[in-house]
Amino acid sequence: MHKSSPQYFDGFKFVRISDLPYDQSEQLASWIPQEELIKLDVDGLKIIDCVDYKDYNYWFDNYLEPSYNIAI
Image 1 (cartoon, one colour):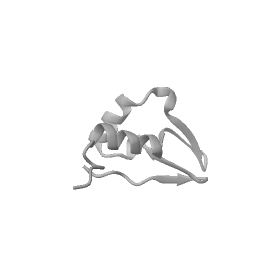
Image 2 (tube, rainbow, N blue to C red; image 1 turned 180 degrees about the horizontal axis):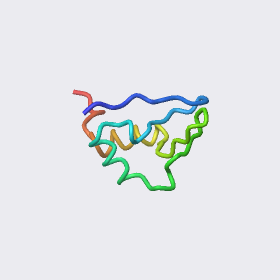
Image 3 (cartoon, rainbow, N blue to C red; image 1 turned 135 degrees about the vertical axis):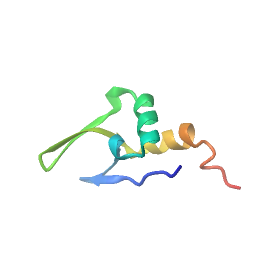
Image 4 (cartoon, helix red, strand yellow; image 1 turned 90 degrees about the horizontal axis):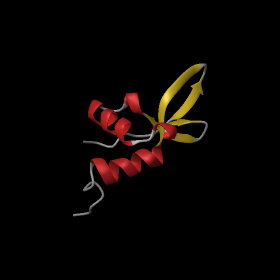
């Protein structure tokens, strides 16, 4: 499984859960507390399922693919 690249808005790095591959979006949504979800208003479009990229990165490296960071 590959790690998604961040999106940027006003210098803020994030991922949108609904833009992730299905397996990742399901697992991340069940792992992250609802109060950690970030709501953005981008050109009048309300996006309610954003996660700080550092949180996604931590989750990916430590929960989804713990061997992703291990150098061979």
